[in-house]
Structures are given as C-alpha cells and as structure tokens.
Length: 437
Ligand SMILES: NC(=O)c1ccc[n+]([C@@H]2O[C@H](COP(=O)([O-])OP(=O)(O)OC[C@H]3O[C@@H](n4cnc5c(N)ncnc54)[C@H](O)[C@@H]3O)[C@@H](O)[C@H]2O)c1
Image (cartoon, rainbow, N blue to C red):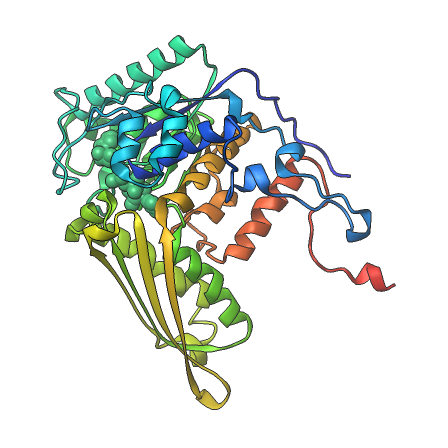
C-alpha cells in the first residue's frame, strides 16, 4: 500500500453556486431534491452509482465510489444561483420544459424557495438574450466585488464553510486569449478599465476563486481557461476544471472514435448535425456564440485520432458540426452523425447515429459529480487545473505543455486512478500477467 494523502472529512453543508438557473441547473437542483426524497434515482452520476475496483481482480474489492472517497452527502447540498430572469427554480424548471410537471410538483416547496440573485450580464457577450434581473455597477471590478458580497451573504445565512461554483449560464460569444488575460495584475487592471476582453463569466470565475471557491465551467467560453485565473487558482489553493459539459453528440464521438482507432479503421468524414429548441439552442443560433461551441466540438476528433501518428487513416478526414435552432423540439435534441469510414484495402463503409437525447438529463449528473469531486479535490489540497476531471468535458483544460486527453475510456481510467492514488491504493495498469504465473 502506498502513502495516503490526508483527506479532510466533509463537515457540515456544501454550498453549490450556479451562475445561470436555466435548463441544466434547474434539472440538477430538482433532480437532487427528488433523489433526496427517494422519488428518483441518480442515473448517470458516477459519484452516486459508480464503483471502483481495488487491488487484484481475485480480491473482489469493488466499493461504490461514494463509499471509497469522502464525498459530501446529497442531503448536505445547499443551492444558490444567479440569473438574468427573476423566476424561482420551480418556475424556471417549468419554463425549461425538461422535467415533467408532476415530478416538479413533488419538489415544488423546496425548489421554489431558491430565487436567483441578480446577474452580472452584458448583452455584448450573449446577443440573443435581454436580461432584466441584472446588477448595476461602474466597472467589471465592482461587479466582481458585488458577486463576492453575494457569496459571503449566502455563506453566512446558511452557515457554510465549503462551497463550489459551476457555470451553467449561456454560452458567450467567441473570445480569443488576450494579453490582459496573461497575469492576475493585468486581469484586475482590465476589470477596472472595463476592457472588452473580460466577459461576465470571467467575473464570476474571478469572484469564485478570489473567495477560495473551486470553479467548474460547463460552457465552452474561455472563462477560467486563461493564465491569470489559473495562476490565481494556484495562489489561492483552489481547484478549477472545464470546459463545456460532455453530453449528447460529443459524448458519442468520444465513445465511437477511440473504438475506430483501436481497430485501425480509417475515417474519411464525420458530419454531425443537431436540431434543438431550448434557450441554449436559441443562444447558439447567434453565429458568435456558435463559434465558441464549434471550436469546442471540433477539436475532439483531431486529438483522439492523432492524424500525425496515423497519416494513412486520419490525415484527410472532413469534420463538420452544425447546430440548428428548431423550437418544436425543446430540450429534446436530435443529433445525427454520418460517419464515412474505410477498412481493409480502403473499402468504404458508413455508420449512422441518430441520438434522440435530452441534453439536460445528460448534463445534470455532471454538475453533481463536478460539485462533489471539486469539493473533494479542495479537501485534498489539490489546486489549479484538475485534469483528472477531463471525463466530464468536451474541451478539457490541460497544462500548457500538454495536449488534452479526449478518449472517454482513458479519461475514466485517469479519474479512477486519481481516486486510488488519493487513498493510497495501487493504481490499476490492466497488465494482469500475474494471474497466469
Ligand atoms: N445541456 C447540455 O447538455 C449542455 C452541454 C454542454 C454545455 N452546456 C452549456 O451549459 C450552459 C447551460 O445550458 P442550458 O441548456 O441550461 O441553457 P439555458 O439557456 O437553459 O440556461 C442558461 C441560463 O443562463 C442565464 N444567463 C445567461 N447569462 C447569464 C449571466 N451572465 N449570469 C447569470 N445567468 C445568465 C440565462 O438566462 C439562462 O437562464 C450553456 O452554456 C450550454 O452551452 C449544456
């Protein structure tokens, strides 16, 4: 057995702060509330349902993850959020149209008490939305201080000593890294100067990290993925993770592509199109917000298939991603993939995937797992980018000198080995020769 890292036990309540109380966040909150009342099951959540094998296969030690590592209990989660609309979580969940009214009515008394705080919002960064429930301040730095005050009041009124923040608000327009993102000093100065390279999501991330609170980014925005904020996270001993929850079509891509590569099957083209009709779809109908999403979705195949290592198989594939706003579908997206592949002697074949998925049903357990794992990471003194949480993201954050790991199965192995490492258990290599000695 190896050295064990001291893991402080979770004590008291864990505050979960959610910028954006839309489809994903309300599905998450209503879901956790229903699970606590034993009227639903946490399907899709690794922290709640997943197991972890320890030691040799012959030892038959396979505890649940939540029994193996010290995670906060679902009964100890307390929620708060910000939104540009004043609807409480019950009303917002009804508007989002993901969960059925009869389920929402069973948790109504709990979730309608959660009312959004006024948001930090600027329409220049989300063109399709007109916010009414927003803060007024002179500079972006002043906005950050207002968020920090909100966090402090939430903490005091719920008697919390631990919190996490998960960005569940709309996708912002595409921003390139800017020199003002380079250092903490230049970033703070840019906030005071109202520099356009500072998006609202960055102000939330700054407020979170400056308050010592772990931050995860569920959208493809740059947000925390800039040197100034990763440096601040290291300085303040805060774990961070991002970006863009891996659900729907990209989840399928990171399941299928490693399989094709494992069998050395070539790829000629991958055309992915989606129709969806929720507010996220409406925001993504704006080309500038779509560009942020497109960048996030496109990089996946390049990294998994490694064309530079396998030029005969992957150097020329054509990859196209489309998102079409189609209101009748609501949150029930349809994602079509047409995959042109080739096999032995370059004979062509095709795969068609038609995934009738529910985006927020796939995203809600990710929010839960990230909240619990980031809280665990902080209690284990882990800080800065948490690459072991790549499993949950379309564009995993990574150290500047590394390429991101996109393969879902490698990501899962990395996550579980990190948990084994934290508990001083042997890492699992899958070598297994010893069984045949
Ligand atoms: N649903 C998924 O499967 C999925 C997957 C990956 C990423 N995401 C991302 O997660 C985010 C949430 O998705 P959703 O389906 O819940 O969208 P949504 O539109 O239903 O919810 C987003 C909410 O954020 C609010 N908002 C916008 N700007 C804000 C700000 N500055 N401060 C506070 N609130 C703000 C909006 O009013 C809205 O209520 C989106 O960025 C989306 O791209 C979702």
